[in-house]
Length: 298
Image 1 (cartoon, rainbow, N blue to C red):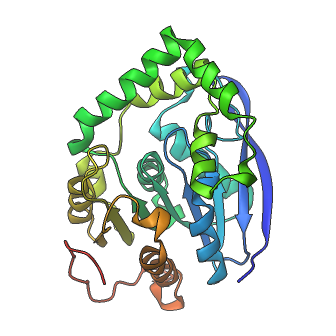
Image 2 (cartoon, helix red, strand yellow):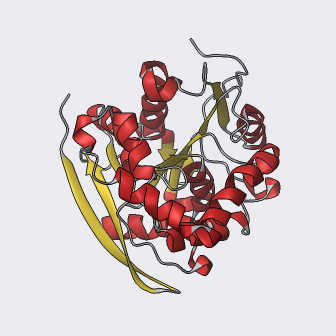
């Protein structure tokens, strides 16, 4: 099904001044869903899921967080943190006039979604979380983030050279995910170093105590054999949250190249969050809890 797509922008005051953030809307209506990309990736990575959700009646917004995609990229590490990313999502909801939304994302986007739930739980209808990065990912995170920060700070010519080599490649002539990889190479060393520094040295996610207090529905997707985003973190998060369900992907590439099964899970979850009987004036109505699944969902 074809859905309308519109690009928008808004401005946010931060420590670096007045920053511009860009987003894309898919579909329409009052059943809002906000999707966030992974670290240093553009919002376009969420386009396939956004279209699938919008085709089922959701009003989906994908956002380039500060330092990502087509949003501004200040070179000040103090403006980057998971909490700041969560505040940017709340500012987006204010800009759109959306009282609440299902908030979700991948990797960094999942952690930023948790921050929204921590700072503004009344704005979160549900959480759609893929590959959250928590306690079990610390060592792999260091191995990935440290070289990126080193290259940006001490070998900036490598980042610039990669950007110059990949920018001329027409995105429309390469497969979708190859284009996303090319977009990820479009980094400026000062901004990339600031983003990685701010995330690396800040808190990665709300504490376990805070997560246990998050009562909104959640769907948590984990990947096997992914050291940076271990399935153990996703499973742990689903156990901590009172109304969460864990879904194990068949493998790390499933949602990228064979998305039908997980798209169905995401659509059913978002529709359930926005079902008329899912809330009353006094708060969410909880039906019978589903048993958490630790294996693949068929």
